[in-house]
Amino acid sequence: MEKSIQARVVSNRAIARGIYEMELECGQALDVTPGQFLHIAVPGDGSRILRRPISICRAQGSGITLLYQVVGEGTHRFSCAVSGDMLDCLGPLGNGFSVGAQVKRAAALGGGIGTAPLYQLMAANPQVEFDLFAGSRSGDLLYYMEEFAQVAHTHWYTDDGSAGEKGFAAQGLAQALQAGGYDAVYACGPMPMVRALAQVMKAHPQTPCQVSLEERMGCGVGACLVCTCKIKQGDAWHHKRVCADGPVFPISEVMLDE
Amino acid sequence: MNKPDMKVVIAGVEFKNPVIAASGTFGFGREYDRFYDISALGGISVKGLTSEPREGNASPRIAETPSGMLNSVGLQNPGIDAFLAGELPELRKKNVVILANAAGRTIEEYAAMTARLSAADVDMVELNISCPNVKQGGVAFGSLPESVFDVVSAARKTCAKPLMVKLSPNTADITKTAQAAERAGADAVSLINTLTGMAVDLEKRRPLLANVTGGLSGPAVKPVALRMVYQAATAVKIPVVGMGGIMTARDALEFMVCGARAVMVGTANIADPMACPKIIAGMENYCREHAISDINTLVGTLQV
Ligand SMILES: Cc1cc2nc3c(=O)[nH]c(=O)nc-3n(C[C@H](O)[C@H](O)[C@H](O)COP(=O)(O)OP(=O)(O)OC[C@H]3O[C@@H](n4cnc5c(N)ncnc54)[C@H](O)[C@@H]3O)c2cc1C
Ligand SMILES: Cc1cc2nc3c(=O)[nH]c(=O)nc-3n(C[C@H](O)[C@H](O)[C@H](O)COP(=O)(O)O)c2cc1C
Ligand code: FES
Image (cartoon, rainbow over all chains, first blue to last red; front, side, top):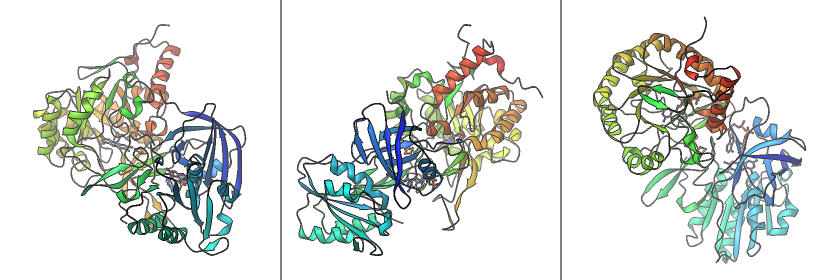
């Protein structure tokens, strides 16, 4: 039977502006597929009744590392957790990235806090040579640059040019794809980046591309149907659950209308 | 003390305990059966069914509000055929009362749904005349006593199984809609469905839900739900099943004291997949601690 995990906070610290790294001790080794997430109850007075989905950035035995950006009350309360606090987590949940045996060289595209789960993807697949194209609005929002350099050839971008190259990471990926040689593309980031990626991949229909989507969630386990996105199936489309059918989908199947 | 008697009977249907998973929050039970054997529940009200498959509304379909949430799923479901062929046989393997929650766009559609569902291997039909998230039908039928009477009368004629009518809180006087359902031949009423609400993003000046409005549930609605269950239970003779914001065993017992013969638990499942078994265990404990040998003796015991 599945159970919720009572995870102990080992450390919790800011690593960039508004971005935190939290290390959790889960008491048992977790079987993690890169791209899966934990669904975490918001600590405090119980007035925030919904759990928050946070991707697994790093998994080692019973230790899990999460990277999260403070954007509202729930993530604010996460940022207040101190070593020894307990968090009530469900997971690992969802269908993560799949890396086929034929994949020797791959590109990863990350935007903002969405780059975090790509770490586990690349760390868990050392047989693959990865190029990472990652961007944020500005340099003070970049994180884990050294860690990523250990698992990929990294290319950093900022919208304002305050660090890395000025511009969008998706453009960097587009150029690299022209040169060819990638067996697959993996991505996670905000909607504008996903849209740009979808455009880029249209020119490379033979290169499989998987993207991790975000949607607001309730149960996180597939029962309440609040987290749906539009997925193509032949000529039709269906509302699929990001929590249970995703969060990772082939980008060719994702319908990105406004 | 011995194990208290938790069994309740509603419209001739026996539930091993008074806790029923509320429609729309529990799918068809599969997801939660991975966390615990769902045979532990008194009953399951399945996701609201319609005659054809429905994809539901656009996302975002959920917004958190203080001590509650809004949803605007819009009755996404695989349709009655897929339910009967795929989901029902699986769920039937469990030792749990099955309520088929059904919605329609017209009175004729409601009657056709109750005909087909009551001919199938379900224990009860729960008529959903209170969904606030669909353009046609749903709450449109549940707000006025006259339309409640009409739709329940038509459904009653075709329903060969016990018929429970799920009432909407979006109405002027809950006693009038409860009585209309009773007069039209309902065997029981369940309440409340969600309260129509809204949430906005001030900076973007946009609604948080793609559907603009949604249904409010969770602890925020509990005082309203308790009041309505209390009023309905005093207004009708048929059994009342209470819900709205039940998160704990104490919440559930409060509804029973206010007149509910059983309770449904919705949003609590979303917050905690183990909510229902925890609530059942807590209710049993409460009975033990208070030397209550039969949970039915609590029903309607509110002293006013
Ligand atoms: C599969 C998945 C993985 C994610 N992984 C990460 C991660 O690794 N690191 C990280 O910082 N963030 C991640 N997010 C986004 C994160 O879940 C939200 O930023 C967070 O829920 C915001 O909560 P809040 O209370 O601080 O914000 P509020 O805006 O106060 O939250 C209100 C409600 O909206 C929901 N919500 C708000 N923004 C989002 C969003 N972007 N996506 C989904 N729900 C949202 C909240 O869960 C909550 O229910 C992920 C989202 C998904 C769907
Ligand atoms: C996500 C969600 C979906 C729902 N879908 C249905 C439905 O299909 N049919 C129905 O009768 N009620 C539906 N409801 C209403 C619940 O069954 C219940 O009446 C309501 O949420 C109040 O109870 P609660 O506060 O315990 O959730 C839904 C509620 C939620 C939160
Ligand atoms: S969050 Fe409930 S189905 Fe995805």
